[in-house]
Length: 568
Image (cartoon, rainbow, N blue to C red):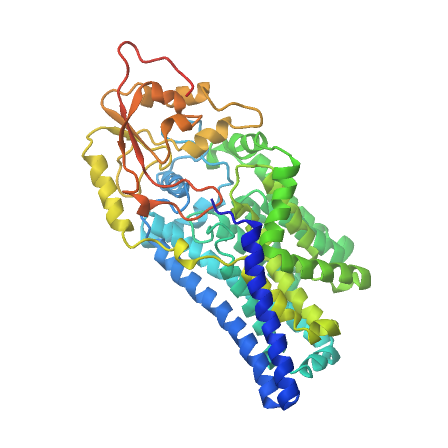
């Protein structure tokens, strides 16, 4: 479980505060001893802000290394990676995606654009997880680049509008690079890299998350340029693409059209026309022959049945996530947002304007309590962009913020809140050998093996049937429904319950602890507990972790007919 206690967060915060206090104390001591205009006094600021800069750069370099370290992992970094590869293979085979559920395939509930985007990467690197992860890395790197550009642009505009405040900062004996828009952009990218694990390590996974983030960010950035209607329409098309990647992208599309309306008034009607036409109208009018006859069932009906509003899982979960990991950025962004609203709303950039929409996306995605924290990636990114920019605003407009080095405190504390042990996201050097060991072990069985947490391997067709546990449970779960002894699960898994020959089930957890699959324990007995033998194949750290292949169950029905569907 990717959860930390508030005690841990307070300890990390204390370290950051002590770093800040050490800076203030050192600056005061050197100022009294050598004078406030001395070179030594200047060097104190260079030292502490230099350490902060190196820390940010270190995170960027490390995450870049981690991306390529993880790209060749042979199994799931995230439990649905191989399932997404199965979707891509269907496209390449000319098969529709959204079809009736079967024992071999149930589609995911996401819109289909992601599967088309990654196709060119498979032409280059082959139809495998590596190609899909390289596609994700390209989008993640692009997202980091847009974050840099967005913050640099915002700070440059602020610096250009108020030279007197910048001069006041210079007199505070701080490093000159604090007035450089590029330095603030670097800090934002450093925070993005540092928050990689807090974002559930999804940005390099074979998933739509990094492409959704890139289209939202790049679309917003193009609109922020105020260049021309053509550029605005290009940005809007990218934001609409975010919806076709993941449904929550519609929130940011709506916010962007609202921003264009607020800025251009009645002349914004073409933006609404395009957004509505390529959004909801195209969605509901999409021909079945394009993607499959069950498109609306999977992407509309199924997700709606998961919605479950509760104070704890819908509201408090989002608040806790923000406070625990982005509290300082939320504080600075919120203060500056309120100040701009009260002072002059015309100073709002698209990043500030969309901040409430980003915050709204949190409770929206939290309506499904089964989500990992990857659903908060756009929200977290918006807090980084607006929070870092707001810290610059505070530094240049509030004398106490200048005097007491607010940037050092806010940024150091923000880095502390997302700190993690780097080794936990790297792939063990034994992963490939462990994978070959698993494949060899399964081949030696000479039997049908069902692995509900895997589906099918990328380079061996060892499993049958191949229906994935996630998509199976997605069709069934809803508030108040008991997963045990479900008719749909019984029907789809009948080949597992009544195999034609020797059969096994490979699981990451005990069979009788899985409410959905427990009925299979009537006819399967534990054959082998592998323990930590395949621990090198565990999935990447997430809020909800699956684990690694551990339990092998053998088909061994009791005497008589094995059809006593029983809840475990």
